[in-house]
Length: 341
Image (cartoon, rainbow, N blue to C red; front, side, top):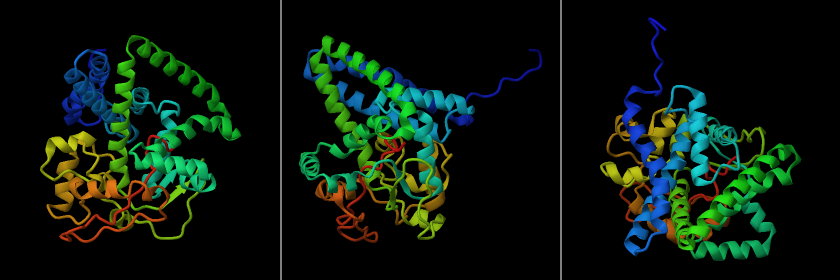
């Protein structure tokens, strides 16, 4: 129409190229990585595992971006693309709107508002607890699979969610057919994809593990959390940590799509992923005590992998400069935004 001006697609003008390139890597890299897993030659297979792990990880963090509506101007576009991301990494058993709603509570109420009390469940079922702890000791993220299983079973366990049964059955049928076809093509591809998926879950749970010392509340619907303390912005920043590789590790921080700059993200939740390193420096400078590097946290992630499953607290982070600053940081488990519905 004469004189009309098309509205911009992107929410932020400077997001056109970063988002286009990163989303293209996810959408093209995921099928390419899967194809590489079924090819002869271990070098190609290893590259396929790395590419598949990366695209799964980025699809999860793009889901997070779409939930915050930082990519597209139109909320409907963010929802469509967010739904697409769930199909790539497997959180599609729950509607995007449910995932978004629960994650927004995490920000507005400054708590880990989860769906399933995995710790309470394990304490009530000794044989499941023993198996879970054994798997976690062997670096199999059993709690995360337990949470995913609960999301699938929830519509059949709770009458309030019975409307989701048809969705779960249809999604399950589609995904089962797809993976049956992949297995018919290459059993090796399925086995290596399982390895890539384990690595993907570890990458996400490592970030989730050390980003908050919030209280966790298993809440299914819209029940309010207890008003037992002041959860203001000061509380939010004091109980949030930026688990980055380093302030200058530009490319390595992209492994988590800059999600490690978590204090900056919580200060401005609508700031897009590619701006977070710059925002962190603007807000906090070079020496912010809430920064705990990946190098400092790797030992704690390994050391407390079994203990954190049933731990009643998150441990402690010592002041900057302490030789074993994060040694006592137990961290959280089962707080993924992919399973909070």
